[in-house]
Image 1 (cartoon, rainbow, N blue to C red):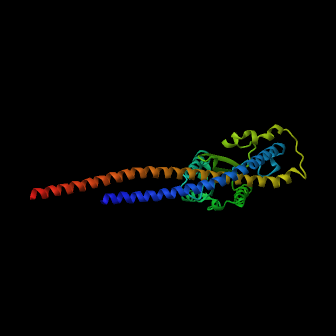
Image 2 (cartoon, rainbow, N blue to C red; image 1 turned 90 degrees about the horizontal axis):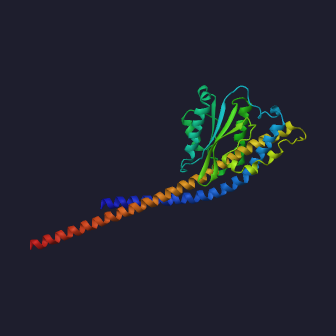
Length: 308
């Protein structure tokens, strides 16, 4: 009977787990719907801003803005790694931490050895992970995804730009999950600073190439700047940078909710399958116990009959 109690206790535990994972899936589904709406609204504007900046770079001198020209001497690298504040999202967070480490090993190992590699970890998971490896962490952007605001993107962009202008680093790259659909994310390493002369495209951008490349047909047009190119770029470039970081945060947020929804759906399915196995085991054990009791009663009755 003790075995039956153990199995029943396990069944109750798995049932409770299934209820939790099912509830988390429903919450993630609702959050994913809102996150999708935000990223689908943001992408066209962000893509068009990138088009405009790319064209302005082609019709102005590299010195037209301080964030255009590449540094002659490397002074360091800043990697912005965007993870989540919570786990239970499958490989969502580990994919980014692994990709960041691989990028450091393959491209910036020398900077790491020289102490010129800096990390800006967005999200609790990434911040805590890289803090254990004694990285030079820049800023603290933990706990931002419960109430994701544009001001956060602006603060991250300002941190990256200020360090670049102060020559603390000569390159800035962002590592993040791009949202493709509810079950698929693309792992991206995107250059941020200096602003690339060739427009960077992700797999999702390439799928929408016809929409984002409309200005390419007019690449040879002359632009008239009023009052002048430098003053316009001083206003436009920071807005562009802010909005690109904002797009990255929204991409990551939508990808996180999709990954969590899938992970919780898989966990719920696994719990249901485990419950079926446990119920079968319980019924067999119960049947064996009943059979044993019947045999004992029968044997006892026969012994009494023989004793008479």
